[in-house]
Image (cartoon, rainbow, N blue to C red; front, side, top):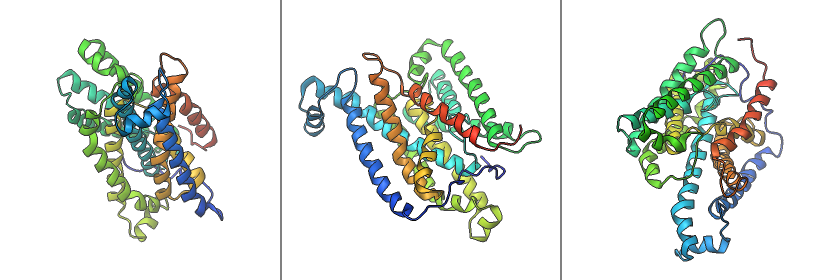
Length: 349
């Protein structure tokens, strides 16, 4: 996705004050500690709560009877997927907001997740349902949806403002998810494969899917690390970035590629989970300032922290049933989106 006009830069946070330099690493360690706590809760909490000692025994040597079986076969894969998907969506949000200079950029808001879901469902429909095939199709779908949203958001008098892109992305998401429902309603077997994707979920998945998506996730992660410094330079404007040695076109291309790899792979794993990529980078910037390297590092930790905490919350609010994680993240993220739109000076559409 090409860059947008430099309106409402996402780095519009005051530069770090004295002490912020210490807060960055110390706060990141605190976030990591909280993530460890949430991981243990994710493994121990469900329709029935399993004692911490039993969880640790099950992880260490497999003892613990039925509870150990639940831990190893159901909750550990679910937690691992939450860690990976949360980190991927958090990183993708940072990249999208930096690339588009759009504070409301998010894989869900801008239609990438819906595009990935539609491509994967069409693959199910024609028999392309191996884990690696699902991941590749989801990446392609995310790329196509992102390109279409950008074109729609830049038509007319306005450039690609946050409002125009968000509006185009929401409209595209509704259209694509409507097509998804049309496909699954016409084919019972496709509906069975898609049900967990209805709102985005971590439940009922195994690690075979992760193995299929792992190469694309690794490639997206490596690209994200490679472009993080040039993205900081692009925030200063194209001319300044070139003067400082950044290759502007290549940076945009690699950033877009990293984004679609991360979003497509994450969607292939657990469906279209929205708002994680929107909320997490803004929380990170509140502690780190606009330095993209630190924002990315924090987001890779805060993403799974938010996703797993939402998953745990969804399990306990309606026992013995549960709310899928996509519902909980939507309840958290929708007010944040409204707040960001209200606080951002947006040109008329």
